[in-house]
Length: 345
Image (cartoon, rainbow, N blue to C red; front, side):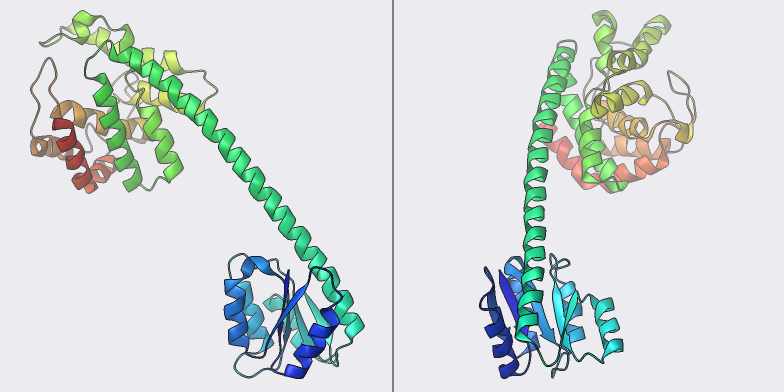
């Protein structure tokens, strides 16, 4: 590892470098210009094991060097030694607050330099090894999680493929709804990991329709009161299919399946929840699901023009839909229209 030495005196630099020659694995590099030394530090962060800096230098003091070095990403744990006189107690306190690790007294003692820097280089090397082990472990964990998530997505895809056999539009519908869910969630401030899980869970929102008879599910005309009651059972049925899983995604999907037909004003089903009593996942999917149903052709209706569907959502904000979810959806209108155009192509 490199030992970065900074002193405006060439002679002092040579003295420190000479003292460090016997230190195994230590390659001393000296600068008389603090700014040039900091440029070197920023370019070789991963190679520097210790910094030795004088205090009294033109342009930048040792305190300035320490503060600048500590501001460099990845340099928080590299030892920094400041060279001071033994009677400069207040200066040493300032240096400690700035991030100094240790001190060397003037005039420098080669034996002390060698012993102090050897110990600090050992500590620095141990810390880097720990960081490397942590990085390897993080990669292994990420790879294992990726395998689990891939298997989870595969299982979900198989489940939804079964649903597609009941409804010729289901596959395209769930893909579009997931896209709209992503737009809404992003504009509501969800982080990328939350959005990814929410989109995946939303693909199962209508899994309960597996139990709806074809005569009702594919009926070209209006449903009777009895048929409507049977159709509405798909929300609770979906929750029962999905609940009890140990998977976060499937548990979220169960919540969505049950709640995405609730309405902001309390007139939805199955529980007639009102306002924020409805899970946010269900409120998001409600907007995405209804919009896609409006703008696509169904056995019982023609597709609506986009602007008519947009006006409907705006009109129903605060009644059918959470106003914030509608606002977030409309804020991404350009992305929404692109999705619709691709679907129609």
